[in-house]
Amino acid sequence: MEQTSISSEAYNRLLDAIFPIILKNGMKATTMDKMAACLSMSKRTLYEIFDSKEEMLKQVIGYSHKKHIENLCRIFKEADTVMEAFYLTLKTHQSVMGQASAAFYQDMDSSYARLRPVYDNQSDTWQRNMLKAIDDGIKQGVFRSDVNYPILLRMFRIQMESLKRMEEFLPQDVTLNEAFDTISISFLRSIASQEGAKILERIKNSYS
Image (cartoon, rainbow, N blue to C red):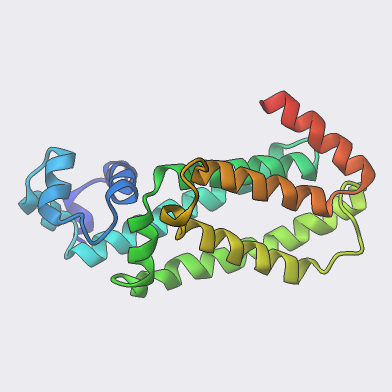
């Protein structure tokens, strides 16, 4: 990437514009020709900014995932309770998943597996932050204290990762968003204390 070819602000706006394109079409199917056409710029200009398609994807995935994590941190700072923060966090994940095609996740597993460390390293940081937030939730009295949270969070993450890649196998009357919503609410109910369960229902009603 030629840092001098474009300002930092314009570069970040470009990354923001590229991300939904690869989410929708997948990384393998989105050629540099197609990307240039979607962005209304020449392929030559695109290559002046990124040395290669893989470099472009690496920058986009890293930047977008970092923004996503920063947004989740903001949610936790502004939420009234940890339960509300978890609910809004899962809704944010659901929104991102709703924009992505099955091809995007399949490409992450196969054609562009080299990009996964960018995603996985930040996800590990996120899990550590979630464990700290859960501890705060226990102190607030909204989460149960008799749960093995390190294991539960890992299993929940595996479940979500699997769900992203199974959209084509879901029953025709079940959408990916519906499946994610059902699993997420069940997860929160499984860790909620009696007081936390009451708060969760109030939150659900207020955001419905």
